[in-house]
Amino acid sequence: MTDPLHPPVPPISGRDAPRFRDEERRRALAGAFAGQGADYDRLRPGYPAAALDAMLSHGPARAIDLGAGTGKLSWALVERGLEVVAVDTSEAMLATARARGAGLRTQVAAAEATGLPGASAELVTVAQAWHWFDARAASAEVTRLLAEGGVLALVWNMLDVTIPWVHRLSRIMHAGDIHREDFTPTVGPELVLEHRAVHEWEDPMPTQDVIDLARTRSYVITAPEERRAKVLANLDWYLHDHLGHARGATVGVPYRSDLFLYRAR
View 1 (spheres, rainbow, N blue to C red):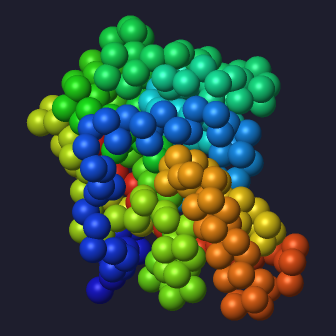
View 2: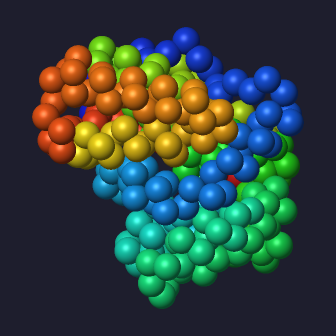
């Protein structure tokens, strides 16, 4: 019998983690997002209500969002009534987060050394960013930041490549954040996995936004102009000529959100 709270994880990829040529390449790709705040905030999806419900099931009042970027998850937590500190190494990305309004604190710092007080949050979150961190150092910092009984939530939105047309879309777009079905993040020994869930959902977007979504991918951001133009042209052909969508039509882009909840030992 299938447990509705813990649905089976469908097969999606042979990849067990994002792959980087070397540490220098990882840092270069991580830094590529710094100038993409407005596009990233407008085009990247939010997180489904079911994933947020699971993160908040232990009733936290304070949260720290590491690698917060433009605050996609940070603001969702603020809207749920939490006091939130968004932490990122990019002041430009955090400026985009603050531009939404009052109610969000920000801190320019690395996830491995935030400078925030110990035991200062019942929830630490990392959305789309754990693979950019030094997992051992970040795990130690998370353990320091968590109040007693606190939870670390790691979450990734990924294109649902079990659907054939989305699989091809992801290949054209060079989406690098597609994990294999039994993917488990690398964390330090201080943390114990308590819950894993997969949430499937759709994000409706005009076709031009689907094309522009590629501009928020590190591969495309760092590519030479000629290669970038080719990727965008291929996406235009795929959506409008091959799949037959009218220009400006709304397309439901299927996603899956993989959520991992940890507690300190």
